Length: 245
Ligand SMILES: NC(=O)c1ccc[n+]([C@@H]2O[C@H](COP(=O)([O-])OP(=O)(O)OC[C@H]3O[C@@H](n4cnc5c(N)ncnc54)[C@H](O)[C@@H]3O)[C@@H](O)[C@H]2O)c1
Image 1 (cartoon, rainbow, N blue to C red):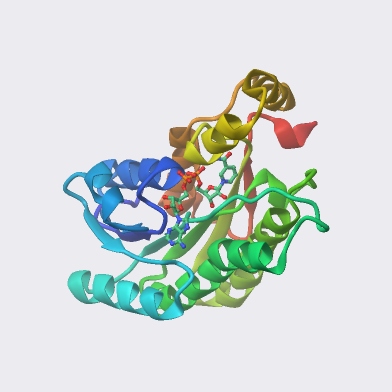
Image 2: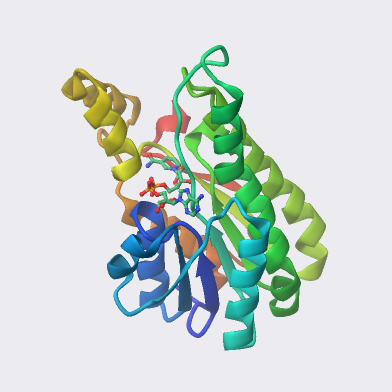
């Protein structure tokens, strides 16, 4: 993809799944990647890549992490907000503790990361790509807090796209369908009949399978690249056709 070589990128949630695939993909494209990891146990997955422990719920930690990257490289071109958690439950099943956990990890994280990065992105005419979800475009059963958080990510995306377009900063998000990562495997492992749950998931996706983390990373790399130079404010489904139903 054009225009990624030498670009300085920070990726949250890069210790596993979609974030790790994105770190690998952007590095392969020639970016100077710093990976945000939740704790030291995730560092080995990144190999020799720069990795910093960052709890995305903390504005202070975001400010420090982004300032360190910008100091080291003299710039920041790309922020990818990937970190997130999934919790199930209807509104009646959603305690205020679950609500706060999900909103902090999935939505406040995007606010804090973007706030820390934007002064640098304005200078570099850079971009933000966040990972929302198909649950930012469509309703889902038993996912109240998660859906609310991901609709929030899509809302922040269009809001930031409008505010920062005059500065040459593009802001987009991707909306994955069900992707075969640890987040989904945990729910399958908890299910009494995992095979039935899995076939239900597959049936929702016209391409007839779950997605791979690398397939989401491909879309993120595209949106971060010069090939997407006239694209801002979009919520791009990466969902095997699920949202086309
Ligand atoms: N897998 C799917 O089907 C799917 C679908 C749509 C959207 N998503 C979104 O994709 C993103 C990545 O998820 P994934 O599927 O790769 O699963 P994953 O569990 O492998 O990745 C989530 C990452 O976020 C990190 N994280 C969680 N809380 C954090 C915190 N407070 N501070 C720092 N890091 C934290 C985890 O350590 C993990 O590395 C999430 O935002 C998720 O909501 C996933």
